Each structure stands twice: as C-alpha cells, then as structure tokens.
Length: 366
Image (cartoon, rainbow, N blue to C red; front, side, top):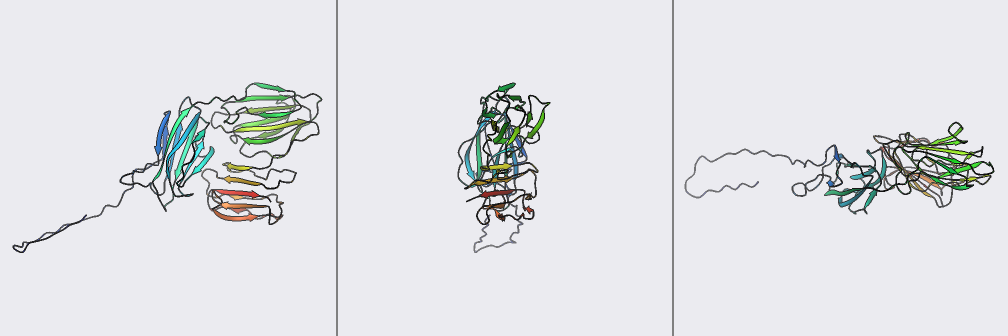
C-alpha cells in the first residue's frame, strides 16, 4: 500500500492520523488429510493456487485414495511436475495405503511416462519439507479393467521339469485365490525347486509347499512377503503339493518357481534389480544361499516400513571380496543420500541405524 499526502500553499488545518496493521500471507488451502476418489476419471493436484499462491505449502503430508468399484486397473498421467528434487515427493502405491506395493517416487521437474497400475485401488502420498516450494503437480487418471487369468482349482503336473506361477502374468494376482498344484512325475525321484520371483502380501497371502500329495504331508515351507526365498527346496517323496491362498485386501505381482526331478538342481536365483521392503522386520541377502554370488552384481533394497522413525540393519553373515565387492548403506531413498556405511570382507559389523525411516542397501560385485 502506498499513501501520498500533499498540501497547497494556502490554508492549513489540524491534519490527520491513521493506524495500519499487517496481515501475514496465508497459504492456500492446499491438500489436507485423505481425499477419496471413486469416479472412473479425474484430475487431482497438490492443491496450490496458480494465481495468488502459485507454490504448494511447506510441511505437507497428504493422501489420495482412488477406489473405483468394478475396475481393476488404472492409468495415471502427470500433467505437471515441479517439486524440490528428492525432498518434496509424490509416492504412488498399488493398493489402499502407503504400506502397499510401491510403484515409484516422483519429484523434480521431469514428467514421467504414463503409469499403469493393475490393482483395484491406488494410493498416493505427497509430503514436503520446510525448505523450498515450487509450482507442484497435477495428475490425470483413468480407471479401466484388465483381464487376469489367475490360478484356479487343482492343477496336476507330470512333467519332470517345468515352471509354476500364480497365473497372473505381468499383472497382480487376484483376490480370494485358493489354488493347488500336485506334481507327480514318473519315477518317484526327489523334486527340487527354487524361486525366480516372489512378492505377496506379507502375513496374509501364502504359498505352502508339502512333501507329498496333499496338505496332510510334511510341510516344506511357508512363503510370503517381498523377499525371494533363497536356495533350493526338495520334496524327497517324489510328490510335491503346492497351495496358494490370497485374501481380499492387497494384491501384488505374485511368484514363479522352477522345478526338476532327480539329482539335477535348479540354478540358484541371485538378487537383481530393485526390491522395496515395507515389512517392519525381514531378511535380505545376495541370494546365493550355500553357493558363491555372481560377478557384476548390482542389487538394491529400499527398506521403508510405514511410520518408521529409524531402520536398524544387523548382519548375521558376511563373506565378500574385500575392497571390491561391497555393500553400501544409505540414510534415505537414493544413493545421493547420506552414506551410513560401506561393508565388505569377512568381519560382521555392529548394527547400522538410520536417522530416518528409510534405508537403501546397494550390493555390488566386480
């Protein structure tokens, strides 16, 4: 506000007096709590006003939950993205909460490709710090249906070698599955199997393996969660019975195993790519089991349990080529985060504790 007082050169009077006060800037309403969206199409954003207040607010922690009845797939398209890189982050999950399967973290200024999610629900979280704010983001979404084959009833297999999966292919498995496989190859030789991929809802969606023809046989193992089971498992009776059961809450990519009979053992599956771990406790390894790990490995584990304040990593075994094959541990989501420790050699270190609720582990071999 600008005031200008002027007088001429003739008559003067008692003058005037005024009082002023300031009103501090108020950020726009922006996002708040959780917004539920149940239409087949929509556009949503961080909530900032492009005119009076073009930037989003500091200290945000907001959620969007897309749940469209009768649809099992979504397409998300960023129309705009401008946030502080690695600090003000849009997190997208396949499911109904931030403990569901993580699709990806998005920040910075580069628009990502179209995001396709095969799930009944999608959950989005946006959290910002108190440092730098930008124009924010806007997402357009479309709900649709994708046909999933899935498993069903009981499948009988007599081949001496093969691959078994939950049946979902490149999609997430279905709700309320109750499927069985009976392997009965000729010759009654031991059946050896190992996993090439594995991800189910931890503590709810289980794969059971039995050394026999039904669930009354000896239990070989109960498998669930986001870590690929390591090593080779055997059904020495010559029969292998599998039972996969899912609930109606969260669906993920499922699993795949390879089997063979006799003395031939499937190749051990080593770690590869990026694995997101959201359970409050768990186990991770290079995947070599009793064998030696491979050359030129480059594996990542991002540990981010919902609501965690710190993450503690304790080693129970360690044997790598010192100074060449190493485990780098970061206090955050990326390799640009603060490096907590570099582990190699044969000496088991003390537990490593993050200063945040996220820890990134990277194993590389030469």
